[in-house]
Amino acid sequence: MQITLIDPLMDYRAHCVSETLGLMYIAAVLREAGHGVRIVATGLREDNNLQPSDIMDADLVGITSTSALFPKAQSVLSTIRSWRPELPVMLGGAHATICTEHGLRSGFDWAVIGEAEKTIVEFAANLERGCPKETRGIAFIDDTDSVHKTPAQDLIEDLDTLPFPARDLYDYDAFRAHGGWEFGMLSSRGCPFKCTFCQPTLNMIFGHMRKRGPEDVAAEMAELQEHYNPPILYFKDDTLSANGLKWFDRFKTALSERKVNLQWKCNTRVDKVGPRILDAMQEAGCVEVVFGVESGSQRILDFYKKGIEVEDTIKAFDLCRERGIRAGANVILGAPMETSEEMEQTYQLMERIQPDHFWVFFATALPGKELTKYVVEHNLLKRNLGYHYYDTAMNGVYGSANIELESITYEQMVAMRNRILGLQSGSNQEETALRHGISQHAPHRSVRR
Image 1 (cartoon, rainbow, N blue to C red):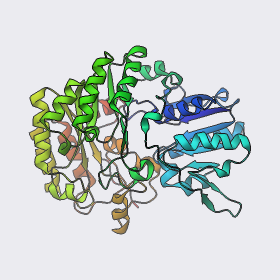
Image 2 (cartoon, rainbow, N blue to C red; image 1 turned 120 degrees about the vertical axis):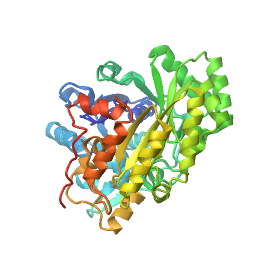
Image 3 (cartoon, one colour; image 1 turned 30 degrees about the vertical axis):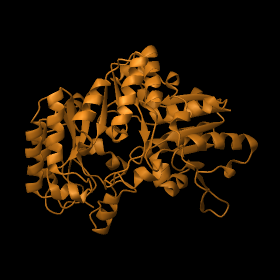
Image 4 (cartoon, rainbow, N blue to C red; image 1 turned 45 degrees about the vertical axis):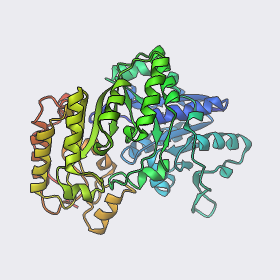
């Protein structure tokens, strides 16, 4: 069977260019099962469009999509239908899991629920046998016009059984031409924490946290070093240091045995780093850590259920600075009840910790999140804004969001974003905005409901 996997991202104006790592894993297991596979990333093409040759020999197409990307996924689906109306098209990614019925009612034949590797291989085999509805972990519209979800697929408990991502199917020349330079890695899936702007969506998709063996990760890094020699790797795990000190001790040994000397960066939490684990991470090649700082207000941190103290943030940045590890900060402005005084506390915290780079996000109500439940229950959700308002990166750049605020205006929030950006000339966010002609110094009016 020939299968085409599509990433419909068509616009990098507010984003760093990153690979379609999830599709690479899907491609790898499909190829291991004997199928022909093609990966298409439309955002890496000059015209951002699908081409007839992408699907003319395909027996199945899979399109991944977040909620923010869903209109673009629909556009790709429409193009496919105009060329080959009979071709089965499956929706994957976060939107398929969280907004299953909406995805199916929008014209997709099938939706993958949760982790996809086992499901897609089982589905492809069943499709060839003429019994695709027997696949676990999928949804479809049945003969009664109802959404039918099959029994859940088992999680992959041993992630080391997965083949490495099929990077050879990805257009890295186009990736680099579009400014991509950080090669993605994953050492784990799932997150044990309860932040309201992430959960329960993450657990719905990935289930409980599972870790790869450090030797398996080191082996993948050795392969990357040999074939791609990336300038830096970016571990996309939600909380890499949660792997623990013993994991990193083994990781250092495995990297040394394979003569891997790649530099890497990662995401983690301020309460999950200490002197010993930072030392071990640095010895294994870590040069940068990105922390979810979120806010300088303890009340807002508690609202987000971060489970951290403001002092944890100060300590984490001091520890990184002592070791010469670059420390980045992600900040969220615009919690529904946030006050101007609390935004000022965030500014003061950023001034104190002096991150090497930072990104200012605006709080966004996304499908399936606990934050969204709160916003809806308190009648604070803006209406009729469109799916692009689910794009947290775009919201931070444009100064827009889909939450009505109780105590501050959007003009105040944009002004605070600009003050924070002013702490460091040439911040990542400001560079991104200026490169694409997006004003960072004029507030955007909130949209009427």
